[in-house]
Length: 586
Image 1: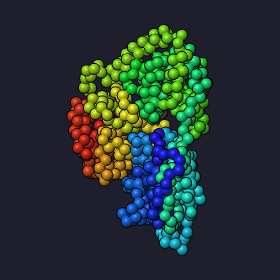
Image 2: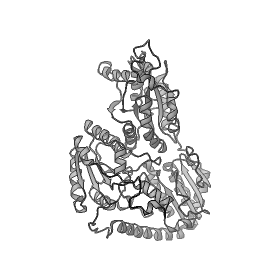
Image 3: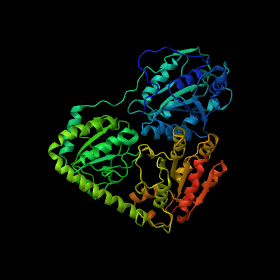
């Protein structure tokens, strides 16, 4: 997370905002505090918002740039993606109760990843008559709720309903500070139509927020020293992380500590690049048979570091958990051991741990050096063997497979993507056959599991990183959940050129895998076609992209994959959104 409008401390001269309505005041303060985009799905509650934008050329007010998004899940996910690419919180606003309901999946995704979003929803008019903003269509009665915010209260860190006379700068500053404090997440603002339209006097606000976010950047040196001593004495330590790399500075910090301590790193269910793919201590993305042999485990910012019901995990190991919320307070039941908790962001805690470890391990250097050499050779061998198994041939000279596999598509993409490309992956590419070395070059789906995130998130990320190639890889089911017509329309309207690769296996594999896990010898496993898992007939996803003004192509021949990718990448480089509908094996 980066500070947003906190560049100067103390009291400064006031900033005058010549607003006329509460809606103008809200938008102007949001922009003054660093919110550049408003991803909006408007309705009958938005007249004052729309009037504010229409008056902006006359008023001279600087407001967030509006992006009309024709589905709420996409609007919120675009704000999510923009934050990933910039570290700056953005806004999403939707239409009353029904729009809020459509937004909930995306909000749950953002909440589980502690992504701050200034989320607002209109409220159906409170009054039945007496105001130009009173109820004037029948749905205004049907859309009223006793507690509209109740639908999403567990998915936000703060909620409030806009009231007459609200001190707008105080409200916005508090909302943004809470959203960007640790552990962080979306906030919610309810906005009655009458309140938005109320007259408001010219505002005089501080140019910068006087409410700073509270961040877990402090170090408890006694606990760090204790952790260093435990790790220095370990014979077989292990680091597990899924999202320490959400802070780009943590990637180098983890690389340094893992090298120093000769400690293997498993990126389990990783949704960020936490460690470069070619780092000697990169031990893969899942646990091996010797998982139970580890005597000390350092867990970095990982809500679910292993699966107790499936993994033979080391019950006797000492477990150290480090993060801005190491006990994951928003998860009701979470029984993972935490023999020592370090309440600090890994980007701050790991450098301190490296310094303390260097002192604590002075008598262990020979053993650590031997472990480093042994582990680095073993990891390189394991990576090579895994790639060979996934590709079915020597990864240095892979042979074109007889059938289109996700691993082959991922290999081709890895060969052709630009060095600084960003991959947004939602059950698409196979990461072990790909190479990622730059922080912020890989993003995966939220631990909440709300499908339909990847495509709109990639659009938001491209807005934040317009000079980078952004590639979204996702399954056909995830693509359908993403409301692709809405997403492709937004991409065309705002000239957001990304490459989307649909790994189309015509199956709902997550459901199939879950059923196989619970009923390995059941009737479903013996069926010719497992019920409720087939997605046939498969839509021509590439034609949807073409219908929205983009480039689309279907690919089913593995020998044609490289050529299709080259053509699609050329289109995107020329500013044209592109989609490849890749027909893969089941």
